[in-house]
Length: 70
Image (cartoon, rainbow, N blue to C red; front, side, top):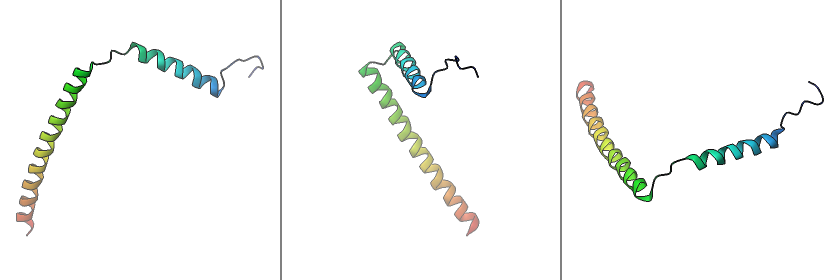
């Protein structure tokens, strides 16, 4: 490697990364508060429904295995 090779050091790389990250975040289309709340509600509802469904299926399969084993 030549002495005049000007590759960025560790701290310069961090500075470059940080500037690029901030630049990308400025381009993001952020949701409005109402959109964020609506999407959060959807996620919570789907999570509760899937949890209930998996709970019921777990109960049914546990009973079936219990009948087969003992």
